[in-house]
Length: 129
Image (cartoon, rainbow, N blue to C red):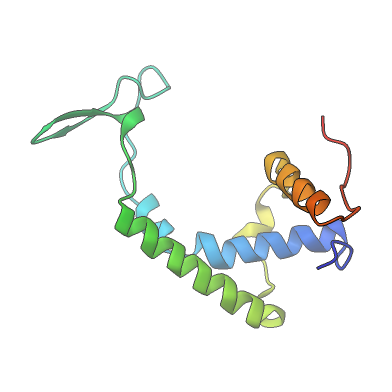
């Protein structure tokens, strides 16, 4: 797929709509709805979870079980597939219209550039810092 199909502005709008429709509006909202602890230190090193089997430092606590992660990834994949199937009708911005403009993720860009080079592509993109 060519990277030149959409302008940067169109890519940004597409990205925001896809993430809002397919990631934000998922079970992730339910997981986000819980109580967030306060931290006097600001880095949560002073927060712990007390269980019948001992205390778990907040910074070492898994916030999602394997089952929750699997269920979330299935939901996100199904929503992305549906979004791509019905893009014209779902390419709308609600709250995402106020989000920050998406930016290039440099580690993912490097991965794309390496894969492009392996397949003999010349679309290495801008030089990374």
